[in-house]
Image: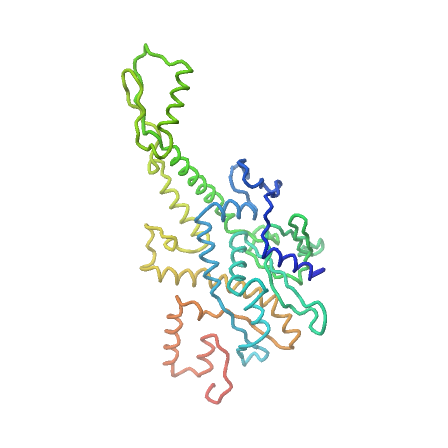
Length: 414
């Protein structure tokens, strides 16, 4: 990474001073903040009001749709509870846990502006929303420890492009461009974690790519509900049925103005608009339940939950009682969703971060997730310990291995 001090100084400034510019990139389907222009995206003959790109997922998904926001925050904040375990596996027959090491220090405080939990939440938030996360490594610039990784930061994926090596098709550089700021990051200076892309490209696929129609439909339903509330004036009109009486345009305009002044808006819900002459009742508008808005929103919420692999019961879905209680639903969230995501993240750390410390120390290390910090599944872990404690046919080290612990070098161990 070139000019690393300047690079980190820029990102440090970004942590403390958020970009307050109202301008955004029009070529990506964005528009100036506060503008009322809406954009449509046409793909394979279908029209969407949400684009298939990271910026659209952030703007039209995370910021506009409460279900998308709730699902991503629930998973990311639950993952933020995670702690790590580091093992010395230089001797494959003797896995030794290390309680103190620079790797653990780095993950406990990745940078001066974020602790372990906030950093994990950022990593998972970006990946769950855009399908990928970019984590530059900040290194020591000079001295005996020059080149050693001392900080980790996250950068917004919507500002990152990837240059590929023409001969191998692999990333040659990662280019961060945000307004007047630009930086080229080499692959060795970056941890890149993403979801599998069936198109074979190096970019990750956002879960929302499969739910674009659902998110668009949900956003439209919220918009329709809001307009329905704003325009819930009279439920009908008593109008003239005498054919001999006709309104000219001036009278129609006056009647419209009177309607808007006296009967428009939610405060006049249920009032009846009355005109002179023989009367006839005309029903206007429709109830939300008649339009199916509420049922449609529940279906959209369940689809979004399905895409991310969690139960809609966690989002207070009154009709979904998959689990007997919320505790079971939370446990399923951790075992079926959060832990698999954490294992993928730890795998990327073992692949792209740990080897740098192995080279410096001349040892072999393995990083793992410490599940004991998830109280929802701690009871299950305690049950496993009790069962293993009664397994007289297993050695001490076999029991420790079953619990993911290292072996102990004592006579009774084997």
